[in-house]
Image (cartoon, rainbow, N blue to C red):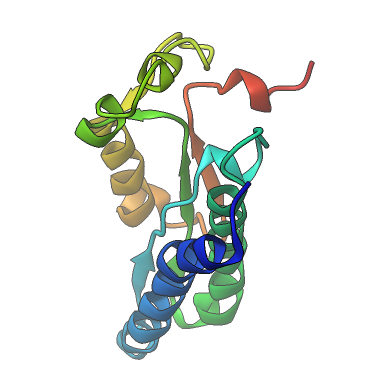
Length: 151
């Protein structure tokens, strides 16, 4: 179980930081008349597990805040969308203790964890001209996360 201090730290890093960053960037982008902000959510925001409540709650907040910022700054030409990845293979993920790293594969319809390049492609779509009519969306880049699919 997560203690209050750990929960508060997680919210400060994973929620307050993107909230403040968007708040600092959006007014200048609005003054310019265009721009895009894409904070990182997580599959943990919609798929509860026995551990990680603070992480899931913080990422759910990030995804909801992106939608609020989109409503706030969209009329000024600023798009705010979130990317919600599932498991992504990184050095940090590979260093997870025990079988946790192995659990990353097989949790989605693709049968493997994603990689950073795949998520970068999703962000590129959102900030580029092809995503010009997307605003306030949470784009799931999770390989069809099986625990998030209806039974």
